[in-house]
Image (tube, rainbow, N blue to C red; front, side, top):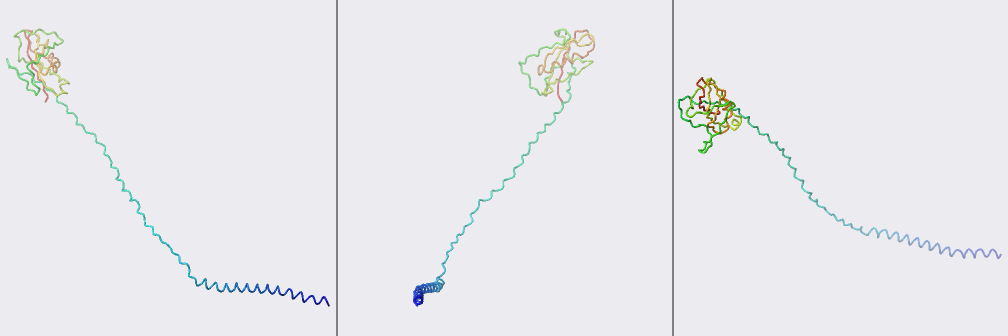
Length: 224
């Protein structure tokens, strides 16, 4: 039969290519297997790469020194006010009257004030409000004693400056013994005690006389 003879020919023609493919596949597999078995031991025999580690030591950088503690602020003490001593009250001045003498010699001033110069002008006469009779030459009486004596006040300016002095005055005495006028003859220091001396002498009272008598009175202003 012609149809039966063709089948075996076709089968034999296909076997060879399939066999070649199978053989090549098997050979490829064997090669891979061979390479796999040989590669593992080689890889195992190779030494592991040595890692070189570089250790860098960083030294501690010295920090800035701590600042010195600030000194505590010093307390300034407020200045204490100076205590001024209280001014001492000056005692009431005492006015010494001239001693009673018939004709006493003029006394020098014993106060610590500077002595007047020789060219010191005579203090001008200060008239009292009451009209005074002019002095008569040679009629001046010294050392007369008043019946009523009024002490003069100490001038405030002289008291503040701690000044002492003396005044010589001529007083005009009327018949009834009252004083009608006062003339300042000499004063040291000038014009300091004049007004107080006149004010006090105008209130003095003397014994009765013929009238028109002129007496000389010396007043000392001193501080104790």
